[in-house]
Image 1 (cartoon, one colour):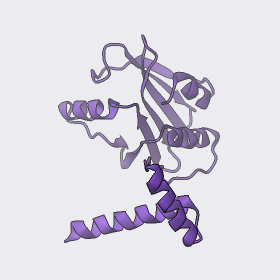
Image 2 (cartoon, helix red, strand yellow):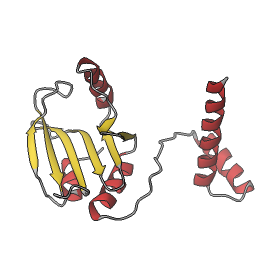
Image 3 (cartoon, helix red, strand yellow):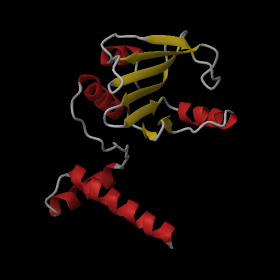
Length: 173
């Protein structure tokens, strides 16, 4: 989970705008804060949170020079947002014209990308995917990775790529 403190630290406590969040999907106490570095081809960040509980519902990072936008939703918030998009006839993944959001599932993935965007550093554009294995499965897959002389992460990455390709082929049939 991402906290307001983490978001503030990421933007170096620079707030350029703020307002009540006008959509209803996050409840009556939702507020949005923005941090923009003031450059058309710079970066900006947003956080939607509850003013009573301080719970963060959603965060966004916009990397304008690279044409990339990332967001993360707190548990359960993405579906509420998507449902409200339908009532507003809004495109749920559009960041700005021609750029779609990449919705990240892992909070730390958003944090890593946002920190790099804020400091102008290069960052890994791959998306972290949460995967849960039982202890038995984990041991089995680690052994298979070892037999193939690769790291566990490389093994899982290869398996995911294979599964994606298989899925694409199945869709084509």
